[in-house]
Length: 217
Image (cartoon, rainbow, N blue to C red; front, top):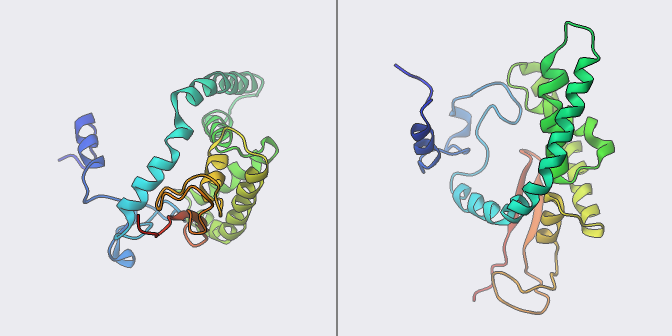
């Protein structure tokens, strides 16, 4: 009997099944995938998960447009070439995960998000520790870093408000900006809407919470 779905249509069916998600009605009783501080258990609220997912999907669609992905392609190729050249200079035995498979994805994510190049080691280190699914002690210890990490990300978003670019955090800063001058997506006002979208980072889980204007159309 198979325990893991390996056929594409099986995986597709699971992804589209509304009964499956990141949240759980009784988080304390939920099965644990690992001891990871962020990836080991349920996240979010069952009652609002779908609405939040749909809202975030709509928000980030422009961030992953075909034009942006095409512009990113050459950057990804350069990163891989750099890592291969670096690997060729090392003396065996070499840790392929540490030297080759882990750095490129982190650097690509930094580029997508808009994380400054000089912060890549900090961002990669924290992400690795908090997402560790094998070393429980390492991952749980990273929980102590979560508050500082959320403060760091909030600072980046504030910086993107002043210095926007073509990246996810700039898109997010624009969406979270209070007193927006563009028309409110909920009430349709074309002047500044004091109840436009507001956002915050939830320190306990690292989730982004965006609350739309609650004005009636």
